[in-house]
Image 1 (tube, rainbow over the protein chains, first blue to last red):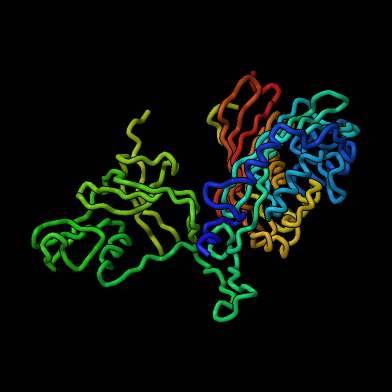
Image 2 (spheres, helix red, strand yellow):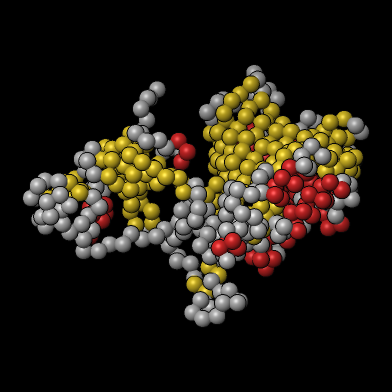
Length: 341
Length: 130
């Protein structure tokens, strides 16, 4: 049983990527050779596109119309009737992924260059090469592989566009319930799972951010936050500051305490970057920091004003407050830039 | 046209009609862009916008700003949080660099879940460099 559990969604053990090794062999192989657009560049398709997207740029209408450059890929799409120009190699690559359970696909990146405009009547041809295949990746959507292709588009042999495209072919993750990116009504019902879970829970109308647990021990702290003050407990016996709030002093055992208002100055003492699991109201990846305040206590929080991957130990921060929604304000740390100008 | 210039934000209401019309106009018949039931089976709560539509909206945002003579040279985008029906995507942009009549614009499209799209657009505006 433990052997089974050690395997990931694609049936491989940690550190193992047999499928990935096979997929790597496709890098550099053509995905389409001398493919041809199903239709010449034409005014009706341009009009449908512009209407759908609300694009009223004048260059795309009239007798001298060009196609919107961002339509580049449209002229090479297979549509409902499929891709007759694809090579065996690309079909084989996709087939291997399908067979491994990576039946779902989502596009992640698109990079296009437009050396010349496309005009109605232009007939496009294209060649596509498999440029890159990633190792196995686990994402919010599921586990799978990123596949990058590069397509060169020509008209009458002349370069008319370059299109680099990255997709994720993945095995859908089973449990979407806790993923904040999949908002709206939370679907808790699972057909094979009877009992109390057979119900739909409406998403809370307010922000999905979890509420702090406020009790008799820490109510004073949250009262302070509501007033825009960061309050630290202090033992009236030995004077030791403490946080988080507790009934007694860890240093002397005394039960008497008062509070001091933090200056808000501090430095990052430690941090972690959260990629997984997703938690409602949070958008991974994000850094969770442990800040050492000037008063000597440490406090867990969020650091704003700096990307998650630039948070560093020793980084100076200043405490502030963020109003999350109508009824919740949270303390937040702001990165303090050391050099200005 | 100068580095640091900010483009007026553009709000795009993400409707089912926009998602489906954009998918069909781009000949993208992946079920996740028009069939909510099949989208759910693939791990999404609803249909979501396809990358071609996003690409087109990013291009439109930049040419809307620079006017009728603007010509797109390059568009490079990366998708993040999906665009689901009922959400609103707000496009914002900043001119990062200018070389003659060509500018590189950094574009971000944010929705209720986070950044749907980030990318750069290279655009030429004849006469703008003089």
